[in-house]
Length: 129
Image (cartoon, rainbow, N blue to C red; front, side):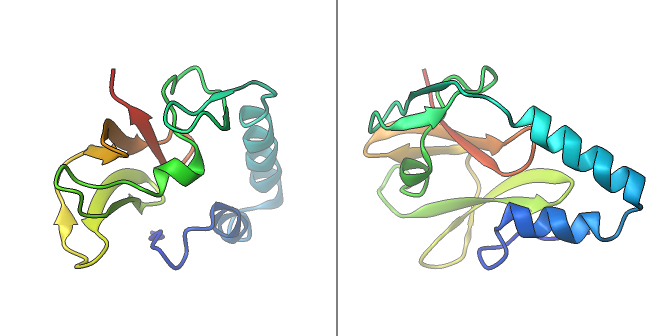
């Protein structure tokens, strides 16, 4: 099982590592599926900063990467969210102490958001309606 940490949060590196461990046919199927599933020309404005962000119907309130990096708890302490493993899961931790952050709710510029795992890997931060 692979762990994604702050040091190895590069999804491309992780995919290549996985592809090297499966047969050619499976590797090509995975690569084609990933390319097709991520293809979209649609963008929408980030709900926080209004910069363009890739549109996903599943994640209508998706934040841009820059805003997603500024998550805090309600008191303003910096928190970050990570995948537990390659098979999924989402956990949070305080950046200054490394202590677990047990909530999925977070804040960006005072706006309440939620963190969840993305369907294709990674973490999604969205504004709560």
